[in-house]
Amino acid sequence: MSSESHQTRLNGRVAIEMDKVNSKMDPMGRAIADYHKTKKASKLRVFSPMFEEDEIPLTTLFRSYDSMPKIERKALDLAKERILDVGAGAGCHSLVLQERGLDVTAIDISSLSVETMKERGVKKVLEQDFFTLEGQYDTILMLMNGIGIVGTLERMPEFFRQLDKILAPGGQVLCDSSDNSYVFDNVWIGKFFASSSINAARTVAVEIIVQTR
Image 1 (cartoon, rainbow, N blue to C red):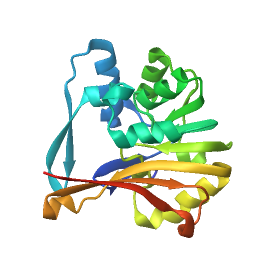
Image 2: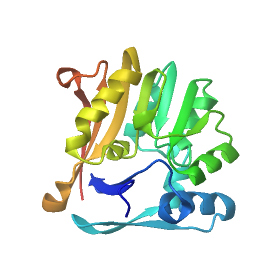
Image 3: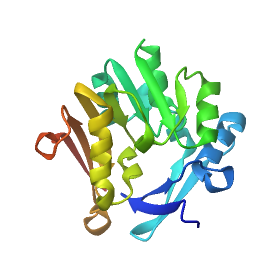
Image 4: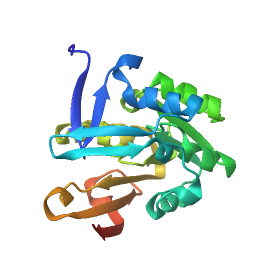
C-alpha cells in the first residue's frame, strides 16, 4: 500500500485513510451498491486479529428506524438543527432525519456509497473525508462504530481538533462504540456518548447497555 494510504484498526473496524477510495479498495461501498441494485448481496465478512471472523447482514445498513437498536434510535431522536452524518454508508440514518424535516448532510469517503445514497433519495450527500471537512454543524452523528474513522489513539488529538473546528457552539457529538473486552469475558458493552463541548472533561457516558451472550 502506498504512503498516501494506510490501514489502521479501532474497535475491530478497518479505517482506510486516503484522498479517494477506488472501487477495488472499497468492499463496503461495493457491497452497499450491489445490494441496493440487486438485493442479492447477503453478508459482509469482517476479519480482525482480535476476534473470530464475523458477518454483517447487508440489510443492517438499509434498515428502518423501527429496526434500529434502541441506542441508535435515541441518537436520532436527540439530533437537531444542522446535522452531519459521518460515514453514512447507505444513508439509513440520514433518511430517517430527512423524513422528519431536519437539515442533514451525509458524508462518506466511498464514491459507491455516496452514489447509492443519492439514488435512495438522500438530498445532501458529499464524498468527503471528515478530517478535511469545512463548515459547522450543531449535531455530529458517528453511529455504528463510526468513531473507527479515527483509526488509532495517536490520532485522537487530530480528531478533537477537527471536532472543535466544525462543531457549532452548544453543539453535540453522538456516537456509539463496541468494547472489545467481550472477546475475553463474553460480554458486549455498547456505549452511547454525547458531548456538548469538545474537551476531555465534558465527554460524558449517557447510556450503557450490557448484553451477556
